[in-house]
Image (cartoon, rainbow, N blue to C red):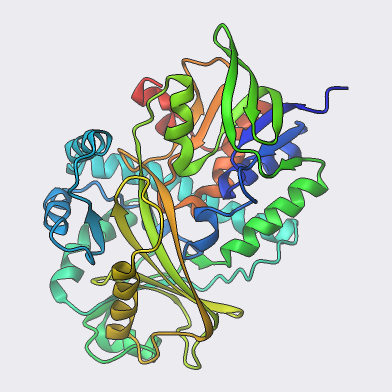
Length: 419
């Protein structure tokens, strides 16, 4: 028996790769996951941990190009585009700009909304059926506004969500303060999304990894992908720092690393890394919010858990630059302080950064490759890897092992980019 062979070889041990592994195992396939570090050590670890159908609206909307251009002048802007020359980033930004139309906003919103709604239902079912201990709370999310213009600007998102059949409730300032006494005076309004939830992402990923192993799946850590062995249009072997592996089908679930690895296969994925930051405390503040919050003008997400407290978000397009940027970490603190009586948690605080896998049209890339006969993509989930994880796993398992997917796969197909 060849112990390096599996029915499905999954490149990437983040939340999406592990969800794909779990659903494939439940469909009867043998699975091996290749992870360059440890499961969930990338963006699956330090994100805000919200499960958010409310985030169906994409960044691609009219006016976003102007916002991005103005951000080049402010290194602490919620959206920052590094002005240094980078041909690949420039091509991506041009493609992104071309999609900042109401037509593309609606089309991307419908695709995102469908996978988010399906995943929201599946995550709740999965946590219950597989007993995943990850501090899941079905509490909703609250967008908070201190500027009436920002609230009015988000009406396009409200209209999109309502067209998709999602529950979104507009609140006036006093109602928001009554709902969340943790907020400071000066709130003009809010949007309550009762269908959203939250979980502790590091625990969720650890629990997915546990279930993958319990169901017979293998997870190879320290297995950075170095090269591929090709025969015709088929990938026969994947060479890594942890050994050489093979699978009848190969899934690319590498998140922000997908475009780097894809170059080894002569593929140019229309993706860029969007760098995000977070601060995590050991304990929440005494008067922590009940809901997860989005402090809208500051673009800061606030996630209170029983076991901790996190401020996160920001979007920085600086290529694959590594390391913490203190300017952006300070912006998280300042943003939270403008809205909350107790903006920071208790105990030790841990700063974090990670790359989000941003597609040029803000829709994930999921489905079979047209170039390589046994390659399947499951990548480009942007800021929504946790939220889209379960539906992506179900979709990939349905495409590879059956039964037919519940979710229509067409909007996510790599074929839209000729991949």
